Length: 175
Image (cartoon, one colour):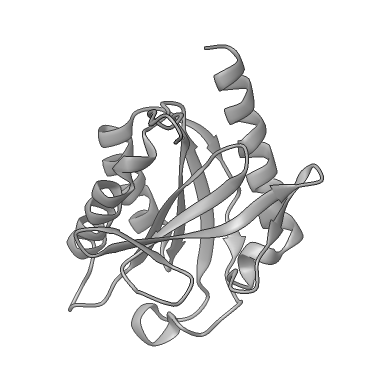
């Protein structure tokens, strides 16, 4: 029988999809207030991998990723996803979102995303929230799985996540 131990702390990441930069800035401000200092911020990227969000959010959507300096327990993912959903609702207009906020975490072996939607590869966590391993780390880089979102499979995204993993690796080495 294995010994039950607390899991190592992980690196909180947030992915945004947005239609206007002012909504991104408002969401970031609320997240910083809750989770502290940002230690990585990607440039703004075009988001044209799916039309899933267009009816609700319009066209010409953008994507951005951030990570936070303070490490978290992976058990916090449920409460973080519920918090980001409240931010989405607060910044909505006429029941349509202006920003989509996808929280997750990176550790040395994987990138995990939270979701409110069940699917065959997702594990139920708690309070209506599921988690999925979206990328796994092998041969010095993150790699996709069959269910990985198309944008998360791209070289620019994987480079972002590899960089965040290196930040995390330095953090845990220095603890």
